[in-house]
Image (cartoon, rainbow, N blue to C red; front, side):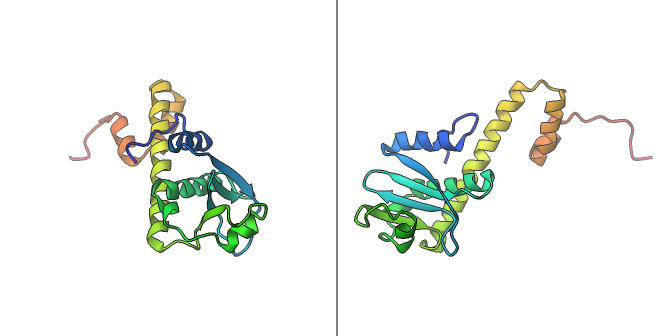
Amino acid sequence: MDGLDLPAPFDTARFIDLLARIRGRPIELVPVAARPHLPCGLLVTTDRADRILYPADTTPLHQRHIQLHEVAHLLCGHHETSPAASSAAQVLLPHLPASLVQRVLGRTVYTEPQEEEAELVASLILNRAAEQDRAAAAVTAPAGSAEARMRSLFAPPERRIADRPVARRGSWRT
């Protein structure tokens, strides 16, 4: 994760575009209507591109997490060891011939360790992006400003304590 370049400010679509350029193959984001009994996110790898299917009818925050979860499967190499095309791909991508779809990765197809790893990597990306954005905002917000005070309220606890001046008005000891 340390070697991964994140755009600043963080933008999921920009990050995925950067990753596609590094990998030398397109990664397409495909919003789909949620369907019961199918995974909420799906990674479909074809001979020409990778497609990340995510629900169009959920919150932007949930969409971003799903997209990064599926990206994490690419980063971890899970797409290279997944089973061949499943019925989920045929339902979600009926316009693609089955021979074209090499791999379909959904949360119901993985072994538990791969899912845990993808969740962890997605969370690490989001955490690092948030830290990067907070650091950039701290540089641009003047100390003592209302914006800086608000940011300090939502910073991690160790940061709130370290950034806050300690004012001693008296001793609690008598």
